[in-house]
Image (cartoon, rainbow, N blue to C red; front, side, top):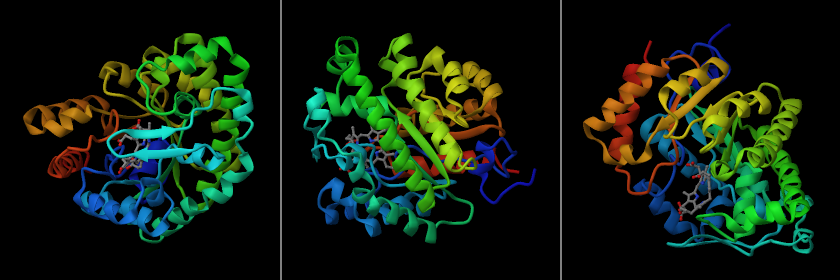
Length: 346
Ligand code: CP3
């Protein structure tokens, strides 16, 4: 098999990449001074997501500064509920605030046929990024997985215990099933549009998969993901799909086998021997603790050595176990990319 120009795509398709690929979740964002400067000019966070020239610029900022192998589209998983017609606001210092949806009546006010029009600027961002992407770098589109997006839609924002949605999943299962069905359909349309616009890889963020008990994990995490993967494959079988069921623990094998994803993102709690076992099945991505990246020093370099030592150069994408935290020194990110480059070269 010939090696492409893009190590990230090679790693995700089971080829031996020319070098160990690295990108970082939340690599664009507040830890970068150039992001903060641009963010101040953009108005609201959603305005930034829907302004192609600015969103494209923010997508490229970390790639220019650090030379990652992947550029993740600058947007947010809550763009989809917004595009469906739910009220979504990002309040400084508080996070997302949504007008909660907890009944079938309210669910019926959402409109799948609005998604394409409202998210058209996101597709324009993708086209703009494609024009200035370095040749070694691949563009990653993304969406939240249905369960994770549903938690924000039902709880009305970030949550600690997810009691409202989890109770509804037992007490009014038809409602949660209808919401998840709508999100499956919306996510499929939204991701197919991203692929048509030029996304070369897609990642599904299931940040809150880990709060689900076994049966619910199968119902609300695995089953919807499987439908999305099948629909994307039917559209374009060449686009690798990375699943990130954070906190999936011992259910990760089943997730890989049943959803058919091309790669699995691992959070920092996954032991490396488990990661190595998963690597027999698929490409693994992860799983450095973002707080260790913020900390820096020898503990960081030792841990990077340990991860790359165990997971090697094939079927492995270096990443964090979750997103970069805002007060991470950019120099630590530069040093990390350099270290992974040195270890994964040749
Ligand atoms: O660099 C990238 O990763 C690309 C852009 C991206 C953002 N959010 C930008 C963002 C991506 C891929 C996301 C995904 C996302 N958004 C997830 C899944 C991954 C994860 O981190 O668990 C989730 C759960 C969200 C929802 C979300 N968006 C929350 C809870 C918040 C508020 C918390 C916070 O960090 O402020 C956001 C806002 C957000 N999304 C910011 C950025 C850069 C910060 C907002 C700002 O700049 O004011």
